[in-house]
Image (cartoon, rainbow, N blue to C red; front, side, top):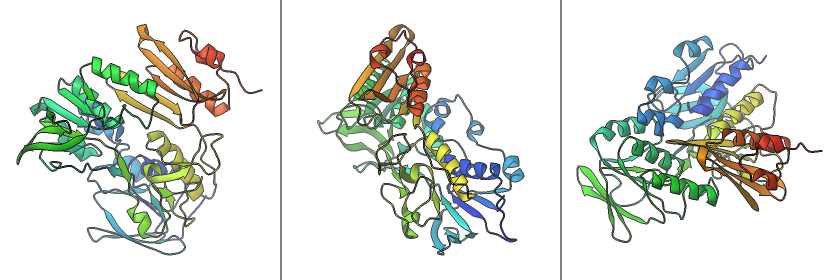
Amino acid sequence: MPTGPEGSAGLLIIGSSQAGVQLAVSLRALGYEPPITLLGDENHRPYQRPALSKEFLQGAITKESLIYRTQEYWDEHRIRVVRNERIIRIDKRDDGSGVAHSMSGAEIAFDRLALTVGARARRLLVEGVDLPGVLYLRNADDALELKARVPMIKDVVVIGGGFIGIEAAASLNKMGRTVTLLEAGPRLVGRAVGAETSSYLLDHHRQHGIDVVLDADVRRIVGSGDRVAGVELADGRVVPAELVLIGVGVIPNTELAESIGLECDNGIRVDAHALASDGVTVAVGDVANLPNPVPGAPEGDRIRFESVNNAVEQAKVAAYAIVGRPEEYAGVPWFWSNQADLKLQIAGLSAGHDLTVVRQDEAKGKYSVLYYRGDAIIAADCVNAPLDFMAVKAAIASGAAIPPGEAADPAVQLKSISRNPS
């Protein structure tokens, strides 16, 4: 069991969202004894983010439901939780120890550093983005402001057709608002799902009352000095809006890592053990650029995930590295997105597929797209089809085959035709 010397500064985890919380929890479960400080720059207890655009916005859950752990838990496990402190400078020694300096002037010593600093909302660079009523949705304060404004407005424009944009648009539509969703690309969620799934989502949300505009070229946001009034497109059309919500992606927070000389490239570069380029600091979650963990991934392939599953699993690997029991991060990535009455679950990564198989049961509202490379199944997008999701996820993990010819029949359970490698 690792122990630190008397007066040890222990581990400083900068970032108190999913990755940071999981790292702290996993370390204590592994018997890590030195002090742990879990530091966040928001004035909130560590909380879950995924529900902000869905259940919390709709009022289905309370603020308390978002909180990860009670104060009693943190006290019992000797994890010091620090709120509302933004680290602006780190003095780090060659052995990985050092001192972190916060904006308030506080100094926090550490023997080892973990960066779970996540990503920030990408800003839209057009005229009018500073008008009152133009919002982003990345953290709890964003969600609280959005939730406070919704009862007073009718027309909403959501800019960005990724998961956050669609989830928020679906929630607002469900709450009775008139919603227009503007996507700059030719299809929805273009980076995450295939063309068939994009088309299915587009048709569904349009049928349920969301005005989705693809290839939308936003020129400016219009309004008076005290409020937003609409969004002007390149064709001259002005879409009325009493509230504009922007969701055009995120940027990994690499500034601290860069300032202490860690290698960064679309995130902080780490190895399969979550170790950064100095061999001591760990980086976990949305900010980490890691070797592709999918079984059979090409040598040298790297990826940065923005998902709860990755934050949890990579944090566990980082914890093992810190206690001196290194284990490589390997597994099947999976993602989900709740969009009103649709639950989209994604298993694997579909990049590089050369065949798709669509399974649709219109009567039951189930829709799945299976992705193949050669004869091997590599991914699936599953809408309201959890059994398909679980079967494909298990098949990818074990290397089992799901014959595409048999999989096309939606009445056939994928698990029943999954064949283990000989």
